[in-house]
Amino acid sequence: MAKKIALFNNKGGVSKTTTCFNLGWMLASRGAKVILVDADPQCNLTGMVLDLSGENALENFYRDNPGRNLKDALAPAFKSRPVPLAPVDCVEVEGQENLYMIPGHVALAEDETSLGISQQLSESLQGLRNLPGSFTKLFEITAEKYDADYILIDLSPGLGAINQNLVATADYFLVPCSPDVFSVMAIDSLARVIPQWIQWARRAAALEALSDADYPFPEPELKFLGVLVQRFRIKNKKPTQAFQGYFDKLDSAIMDTFVPALENESAMLERELYESCGMGGHYQLAQIQDFNTLIADSQDVRKPVFALSKEDLDSAGIVWDNQEINIKRFRDLFSGLAERIEKLTAK
Image (tube, rainbow, N blue to C red; front, side):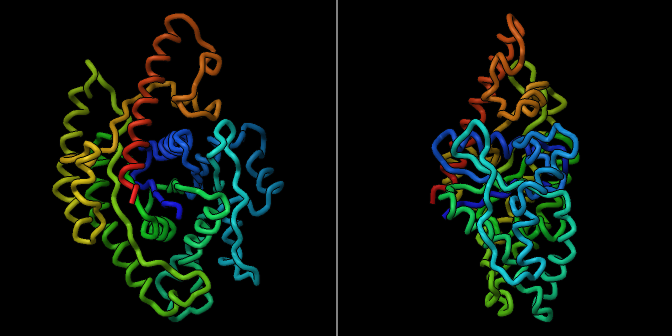
């Protein structure tokens, strides 16, 4: 069965989408079959895979590919249509044969209200009882169609019903963040929110209305993989002094507040497993520095940073030599990240 991994932080601007795309590609290059899910109505992940440079390109894609996005695929449940959910005809990611995507939809947020109501009142409103379990069912049947090993879910920043559902019903989650005061505050917030979501999911799974629904709501088994610290500058191969202070504050928030809150809900893996991955004491999956223009360049050509070529960057000489060094460094970082993910999710 495919392992569902949610990438979530209620703070924006922490490179969730970039991480999702590059991690998915790296896992696929290592032999796994991976489905990327764009659950953010901003559809940035969709834009990293599809060529949306033309006028009305996204609208044209929706028109020409009915049902091939997350919102439309869920329509049988959300619109109470007399047909069952069907596996998504995923978009094949160009350049990586093991990588697929369920595109997002800018109007997915319109389903937030219906889902929120169903998750609060599903016992009394029978017509909504299929909604909470529909995401899980859709991912399961799509993963079965593609024999997928991983489903990576890119989420919007926010604490709405869709994020609540997709985090609580994931198998694992990781938290991309930056070494700044806002990410420290976000970790403190998540220490309160994630346990509440897990508790809600346990109550929902126990409701007869949801357990007997056409798309049963699953018992939550969420586990924390770690944090991914990104978007910082280095000097002499170390974070600059300004960033190092926030690294220390992040470590304190994670160790003193976040991890204990998750332990209370049995949402942590065995401590020995983290330690075997070199994560003991800080729960950091990786530290990924600011790679300046390489991220933007990779988005322009719709390839991961570690797959960029001299031709992609249209550079030569010492400029290319420096870029090549950074590309290799990025590749090594994401290869190590993928290896940790594989090990942490091996069971």
